[in-house]
Length: 164
Image (cartoon, rainbow, N blue to C red; front, top):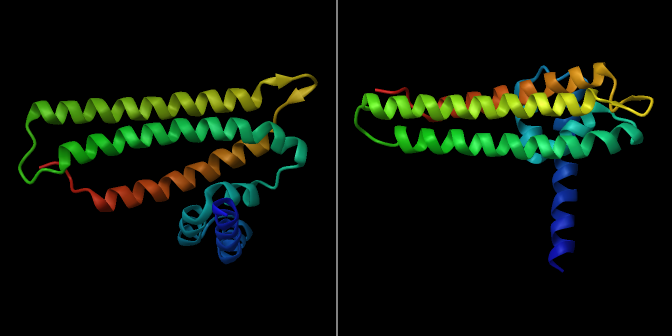
């Protein structure tokens, strides 16, 4: 019963969000609010819509995408935790705490870059006869993910104050 209810909720969410997916994909992802709304509803469905992969490309892309998303989520959690820990205080930050914050932010950035490089290498790596995806699809995904991450970074920037 729980699975049926969950499936129904996902299907309903996709139907409701379909205009946002279509709007963001049809305008070549220039409406950042539509992008933000579509990603909040179902990022994977939005990426699928915007990428227009063939079945064969999808079989090669989605496992790499899932691995990359897990790495991005881990880096984001690390970044958020360090910000919340250090900036959640009402007083000025000490130099030691500021150094620690900088170090943690740099480590999260490095983890993201390492994951991105690994993802691109996995998609570009020649398989028997051809790479997993054409370079144009990989470039499109990197642009798409960059726009998604920009909206997320903007939301985070609005939430947390600057260091005192």
